[in-house]
Length: 70
Image (spheres, rainbow, N blue to C red):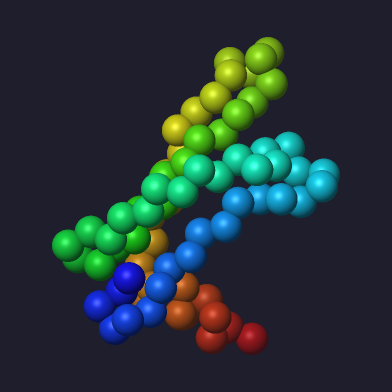
């Protein structure tokens, strides 16, 4: 939960043709500076070395700025 009461919700990819279908296992944290960090894993075909841990960091101000673009 954000300090203002809003929730950050992370969804898994369920697109029928997605290469990483169902690939999100939620782990989400709000850091002291209000940066959001979402961590998951990605499964790859065996010839591509198996899997990876993947994280993204963002601030809600960045999301809000994107939402304001026409």
